[in-house]
Amino acid sequence: MIDAVLFDVDGTLVDTNYLHATTWWQAFLQHGHTVPMADVHRAIGMGSDKLLDHLLPSDRDRDADDAIRSAHTALYAQYWTRLKPFDGAADLLRACHRRGGRVVLASSAAVPELKALRAALDADDAIDEATSSSEVGASKPAPDLVELALERAGVPAARAVFVGDTRWDVEAAARAGMPCVGVLTGGWSRDELEEAGAAAVYDAPRALLGDLDGSPLAGAGSRA
Image 1 (tube, rainbow, N blue to C red):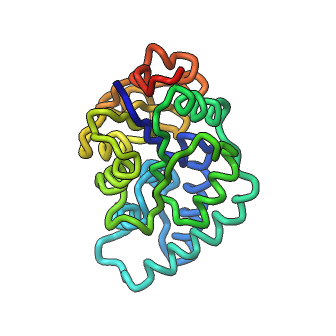
Image 2 (image 1 turned 120 degrees about the vertical axis):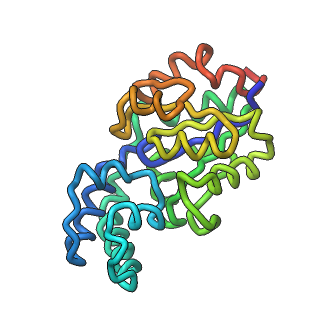
Image 3 (image 1 turned 90 degrees about the vertical axis):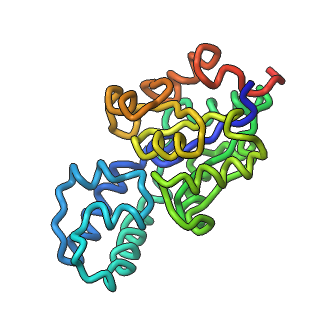
């Protein structure tokens, strides 16, 4: 029996990964770093604490890191009112909620950004809890965020499933002791997510919703 479904948000429920890639790329350029766009995209899903170390030279002037983060936030904020959820994302949350499962957003977004994401989803009636980046010491692929979401759900890892779109989601879920169901909406391939350890992979939230009874989420709750 699954008592809770934890959802990554960026790239999983809301179509933001390529917006993040573009605005991080611009933020890096503003501060003298030329980083290939493909490399930026592959780091999306990490929190900024991990992303900067992953993409920038280790001998950089780290005093500029906060300014780079601020530049990304300002650039990305221009899109907040235009964010769009993936087809079926809100319906998937509501289906899990109707079945009696706890629905928790395990987001590494800061609070203002998380509000914009939730507004785009327009499914607060199906969301029991949510996390933000300010509440944990380390971001994905560290398990801190997933473990906090589990705590908010009030269930053990053995009775929860995580849904995400990147290798970093799969790794964070595994470190927290739970399976991860992948979706391809973040730009990672099926082979990559399966090789990382995803329990199942679907094209998009709508596809997962259509196979809910055949997926690892099948046992979520009991009020169907």
